[in-house]
Length: 285
Length: 285
Image (cartoon, rainbow over all chains, first blue to last red; front, side, top):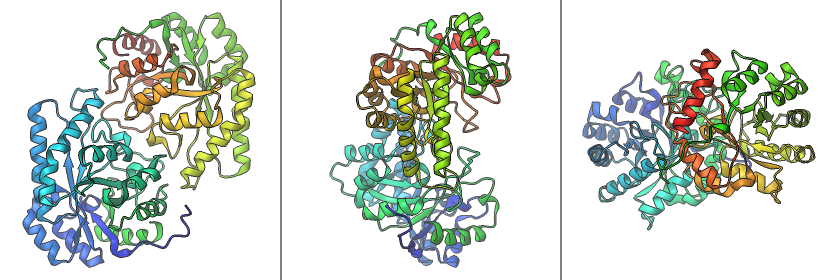
């Protein structure tokens, strides 16, 4: 698929993941900032939501006419003992409640990695499957779809042992075979751009399973495994190509910008970050 | 598969990849060091081989009774223009000659990433396929099997755009459908441990396609994408499990220790590194 033939993205579909400006703004400032810059989507992390309170946040977001493209994050299911796994599930139920309060389009699941001291990644993956299974009913009855986010394999040990889109979709099929919309995936170009099976995975996912689309860029070199993500256009990811694939699959949702960047974007004036996001969205996405 | 039931590895199958002690020893010292420590395999990198000369190295390795478990490395096929791709292939032909001179069991291919300025990973993958295809006849006639090494996806941009075992095996099947032994894979636990399809991939590869087995460990946290690999036992990889899989597939070759570790192992006395390797091989592999 040629990337040059594509029309530019709809600017109304840009969304701000609060991680992108988390160091210098609180959620109030982020909501006001999005409105000021004409950015129509927002996706808060729970730490920022907790500061303001979910109800207050919901009101403010509504008042500013923003769409909540997701709540980050649930997940982190694996734990060393039964009690730990139970606590994780309870935490996910609370996250679902918060997501419902702010009318989030999904709760993003960063599923968790190996429990401390464990080398059993197959076992961790079973804990993830069981954990999602236990949270799914509450998600369904709350009207909050769960979006499994496959994370880059470099996070397999400590953040998420679901590392490919195919693996996430296998989980969806196993736990939600009807495909009723309660379980799907978040496709983040940073995590999946390298995958030789990406196009097939997106096609397989289809409209029903693609609940979120996250963008940023992979820098060369990358100097930190977690906090050195790039702004769209500064790296090597062919974002228009991936966008074309998700659109062909039927996705019509937002393009959520999530950039963890300790040395660069987190240090800048958030208004500059938002302006840059808008410009880069049009040029490189 | 339980890991605890397994018998310890055969100590005669330990091999030293020269990258592990590259900062403080030259190839002569490495060969003598292996012999002194009773390590019976060695896998030189080409920079070290060039210092000594392939013929001189071959003689010295033979005199010390070592097996050359691989030559690191060929590959790096993608380039911005035809001339660059031609140069890459010529370099691979020379590497095959060197591998033949030292009687290496394989030439390990780190296939290369994106050409400078490119975002076209599918295109880079085609260049890799074509490049291996062009080198394969010479490899076959020289009796040097080519071992495609799938590298961890975090190296997709700058080192290798072959990132899963399945992808490497698809290349093998496409270029060497007869499976005559001229083309296979190097399974390095560091690169593939996270892969949910790993067991299936190893089974699919089978004895014919597994040309090398590399070991080290994945540290948590990992502080550098390239130079922070761990000694076996210091990280989260269940090495005995992966060894059991390759042995079930019929692999009877060496266990090659390749540790790139700027802050730790490269700073230590290489004799201490080799002693530690031996001890950890018995306990954690």
